[in-house]
Image (cartoon, rainbow, N blue to C red; front, side, top):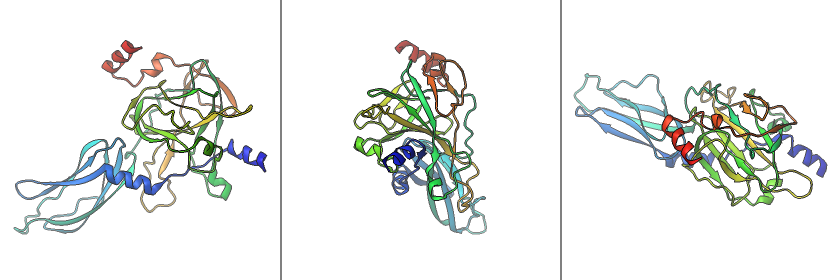
Length: 312
């Protein structure tokens, strides 16, 4: 039985999200505010005080002396800061004020996300280190649940004491560093430490199975490709430590109530290796990691690149 469990642990990935936790977090991050002009017409804003971009859905009802927006509900991408949702304007049929009710919901991601095909990712292990890569399967297949069509996730081998590195520039939006390292032998669990980073194209990279107490970034930090973010959990004996990387984004075709369309779509990243550019990694194949400057700086602006070169 132990052999079977070990085999499954290296072949399958469990996708467990605490939806109630994320919903609570989003509610704290995003609020709706209303401002009225001199004619009493209300303009609605979403204020995002967090670091995660959200799709905000605002549905209006019981509207009086105004027409409802079209479409209703209104969907908007709200990145950190303030975004205008829309305004209710008077119809002119009555001298009374505008009455309304509204409800809103929030989900992570952006509308109409198109992952960039021009981005090259770094292997998330130390430069000069060789790593073995394995493509992971969707754990739901074990219970006859159909895998998302584009599901893609990777595990990388490492060495005890090694760092896990950011593969691309982004902003840290979630850090979990509370789980005991021994729990990470139980691959069919959500009790693992991880760092989640959002990129400029609104894709999310999740680095999973990190050693407790070694995560060096906090939520809101900007990280660059090739920057260490944590250490891998050590293994005893001959087994190499492993960590996992998954990159996903909000499915532009998702519609609430349509069970045939998954909320998340997945990215198949292309990597720079010691021998090739823009490589789609193959299962059970070793790759040599390099961290060249052109990949590290590819998403930086001019001032940002200049500052980075001064420090490095």
